[in-house]
Length: 68
Image (cartoon, rainbow, N blue to C red; front, side, top):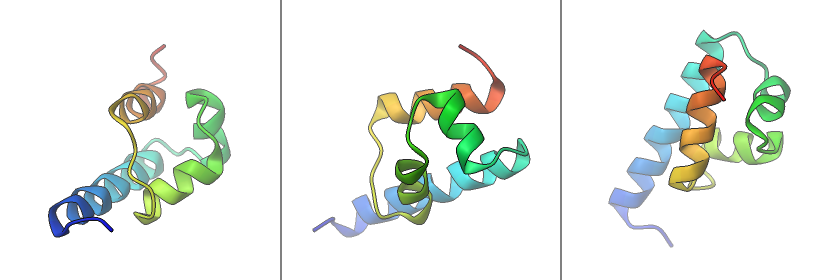
């Protein structure tokens, strides 16, 4: 079970991913293709049910901008 701090960070990260995906006009599937991360994992991250690794966060961030 996650601590309160860990849970808060996980939820904030998920909200940020979802907000940035929306601002970029990307669907879950489009972000998944760009990042190489499954759409189900992205969905779990956005809902706060999975805590992403630092590498996953970086890959998602780069994908929002189209950077490789």
